[in-house]
Amino acid sequence: MTADPEILFEQVSKTFGRGGGEFEAIYDLSFAIGRGELVAILGKTGCGKSTTLNLISGLIRPSRGRVRVQGHDPYADFTRYRGKIGIVFQNDRLMPWRTAIENVALGLELNKVPRQKRLEIAASWLQRLGLSGHENNYPHALSGGMRQRVSIARAFAGEPDILLCDEPFSALDEHTGNALRDEFRALLRQTGATSIFITHSIDEALSLGERLMVLGRPAHIAYEATIGVDMSETEREAVRGRIRRVLAGDAAEQPA
Ligand SMILES: Nc1ncnc2c1ncn2[C@@H]1O[C@H](COP(=O)(O)OP(=O)(O)O)[C@@H](O)[C@H]1O
Ligand SMILES: [Mg+2]
Image (cartoon, rainbow, N blue to C red; front, side, top):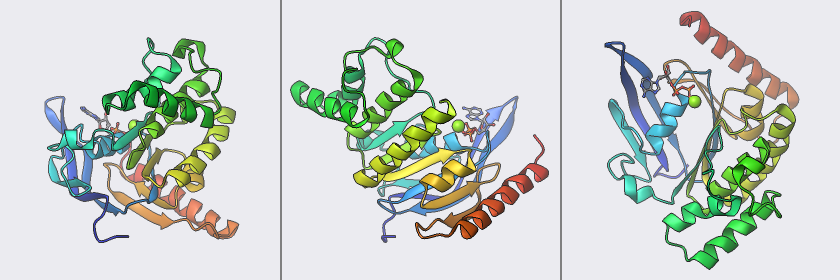
């Protein structure tokens, strides 16, 4: 890791006002992610994963502690990050009145890339995601898997420094999700962007991340592991078992 982390959380807590009281979604969360790292964040539904991403993208600010992205405060300096952060959501969030290629080109348009250039870039990303011939289709004419491919193309097309992926395959059927997961990992490796991949699936986390952070509830680091490419199946199984116990222990402490 470089001296200057790309993403830094220092004792971050986030509370939401709820039912007249305070609800703690994140408690004392600290971590540092270096440039180019690919990190999987794993945790059960409701443990604060999306809230963590929202803090990184500067949509919300912490109640306590410090968040820094490329050395700056993403909430206070929100506009600084335009085009630098790409996000893939669980649902594609495409604009229904724009064609596939226009959806992919949207970020480039906001970044003032000239029209011809942005259509070229968008077309090449659609091609890389296997959607040649569907450039001019509207989202309603595409399957769920294809729509998610368009939203992935949109995130990559802007060549962001940071890619945030919030359970992007969890709304797809297993077969479609598996096919896309492998391609997606290859693309992530090629771009070299700092990437955070959020998931509630242990297998998905193990297959995608090099570094794995397991969050307890409210969000804090409950367990961390590094997954080496040369890791044996026995070692993998040990990590898997440990994660299961960590997640189960969390459930025992905090019944839903
Ligand atoms: N804006 C909000 N107002 C109130 N509660 C919120 C808000 N956003 C998230 N929460 C609560 O914080 C907890 C964590 O939410 P979230 O980060 O979406 O979890 P995850 O993505 O891990 O499923 C949940 O209990 C959720 O209801
Ligand atoms: Mg979520």
